Image 1: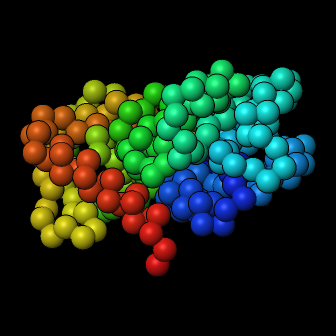
Image 2: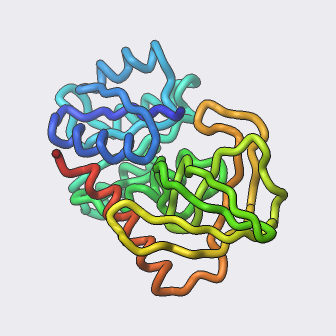
Length: 234
């Protein structure tokens, strides 16, 4: 499970980031100041750091420079969440070492893609999140029941001790929470995972193929709404 350190003094802004990031399947921990973040980094190294643009004890740009100069954190991506859209400010932030600027108010799509760009080892460019959805797989006129580990606008991951070969074409039937219609799609196995990892059990990644543009748009909007709901306090 990947970890993200959120350096943010505002309780409201931290809660927003925390809800969305955990919805994406990552774990978080928080520092309310630069000094607290340095202390936490001495105990545990996160996979990424997201920093607000206002800290009570240090300029965020100075904090990022210090992190980039430290051999322990120099390779850890640091992102800034900022409402300051001034070009000169953002240029200075990137020059200080920030990998990405996430503009406030946040677009869930923009936030996700920038975070994934820093964290993903597969270069994913579509929204996906942990989600349990029952799926019936049709293969060679036989039907097999599965439940997704993650679901996204472009495909899904099915845990299975016996994955099918790459490039295997499958039929997929499922219903999404909140939508009454039955989805009947084609999928292609694009990768398999033989051994479990910290983030994922053994199984197979499947992408949707031959999907209509209108359905692509529907799935994209569905995933955006799914993540947006995470940012709204219940």
